[in-house]
Amino acid sequence: MRFEGFGEHAVEYYDGLLADNSKAYYEDNKQIYLEQVRAPMEALLAELEPEFSEFGSGKVFRPYRDLRFAKDKTPYKTQCGAVIERGRGGGALYVQLSSEGLLAAVGCYHTETDQLARLRAALDEDRRGGELQDLTDRLVRKGWELRGDQMKTKPRGVSPEHPRLELLRYRTLYVARSWEPDDMLHDRGLLRRVRDAWRQARPLGTWFLDHVGGG
Image 1 (cartoon, one colour):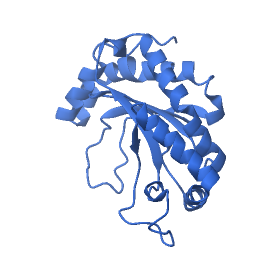
Image 2: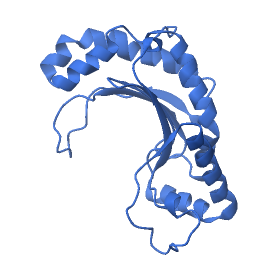
Image 3: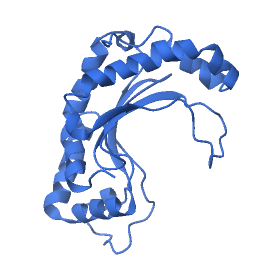
Image 4: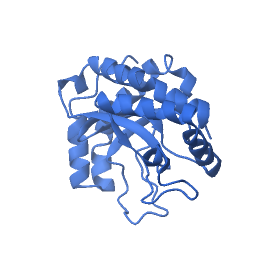
């Protein structure tokens, strides 16, 4: 299937889900989700995966939330996310559709204990850590937002004068940029938007592949 954009009711579907996150709403609108959201996302990922295959294989996340340990018991995710990655942690490419529009992101979204240790060891070195600082600074200047799970304090044993202290506080670290809903959401040109964003942030993903590694 060739990607031709998301369906005309894709954003509307998520607007409705925000108002009524119930099995009844999902079942009544399941065909919209399958045909106008999930199928186009699968097509988008299938076309992009060959160019970015060094990051792994593509996956579209299921629409159901994991409620086992969640305080919020709403059953459905209010976005459709897809990722290209080798495994948990390391470098990954992400794209998401929601009522807010489109989001593209690149970086490290999860770290096991050994991966976090490798991330901090690399950041502690001037060469590797300096490279990550330069990569994130450059992307932020180009309009990306730096995100991740960040400690309020500093990691144990790290000097408060460390030149990369802010980065060392992150347990996960990625960059993201977003676009509000527009006509391109429903057009093949959206493929170029995601591809160009991933190309721009690709060196950051490669850094994580090289120095943190997949799970």
